[in-house]
Image 1 (tube, helix red, strand yellow):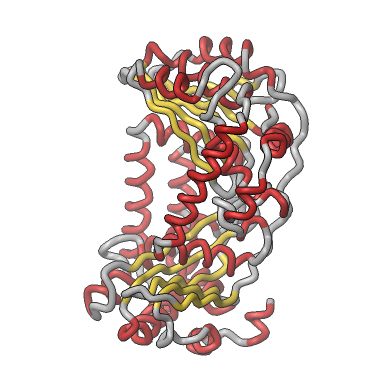
Image 2: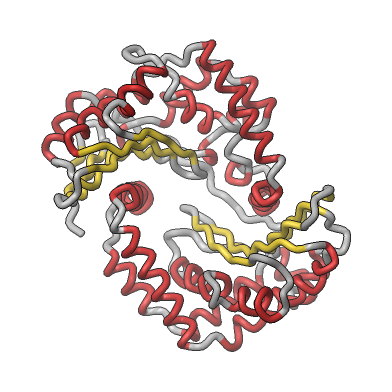
Length: 427
């Protein structure tokens, strides 16, 4: 992959990844500021800002923003995550300039009209309500909160009804002014795009963002613990988790492979043992989320209350085995799955733009796929087994569940099953 990178005088980075055989381009602005950058009195404001950016600027009304991009067959959207916020567009190749202009306009010139703000708050309250009514979403919110407590990284991205209702237009503007600085932003495009033309346009417009340092999010600390929400659902949504690894540490890629081996597909250990051999649930999977300074490893499943105890026992048994008998064939298969995912994503300009932008923000450079695969190829079976032992037997677990949770073993019982001592859990 050959990309072009130009840093503007205000610190904003412009990146293009040409795919000249395409007739379209994906472009967006990625900001290194997400929910964990919020102060205690700002819970949910990053997500509210993302919504309000589309609700009118000094040059365009909310309707005009939607019509202008859709009149030329384009798409416009945004997403808020824990550590970044992204605003992106998909357009035909002769409309890249229009897409870049609209993205600039919604970030630099939004008016945060009070009537629009009132309506959008109501929309987000409906979004929060929908999440509360969706147990497989709700369990992940509680899992993140239990793993990290009251720290910003542990709070739901959407905020709460009270915090969302309390924000003023001035507070939204203040948050934007605090975090949307040139050194904290990347304008990235992939597909049918001309680098020099995009840089020239960015110099004429995006240079208005200040070249000023941004306060880093405070360091996060994994806590772990237990959260049981007893509710009248048919199934229990459950996550058993442990401290994971940050993007920058040597065990990050080993953790990704371990997650793939345990629950990364139909051939994974958990799927075969929990579903195929025991028939205890419809789906079971594992995940590893890395952040800039910490991480989290989890196993998610759902089943009826009558099968909960056996489900936990089987999952714990598989975690115990992971430190003893992972074999080369499993490691090779996990590497092949990750490699195919990387290469398949390269066929999508939107995926390419997002991957490159996040790498620049997180690592300060693009990491080529060949380098990623070299890191994965360097990992041995012994290394994966050793990591499994350290994750599953030496860190305090996090257990969250939503539904008829009565039969679910408690956290202390699971700790005993894993052989985690009080000293290990406290460290």
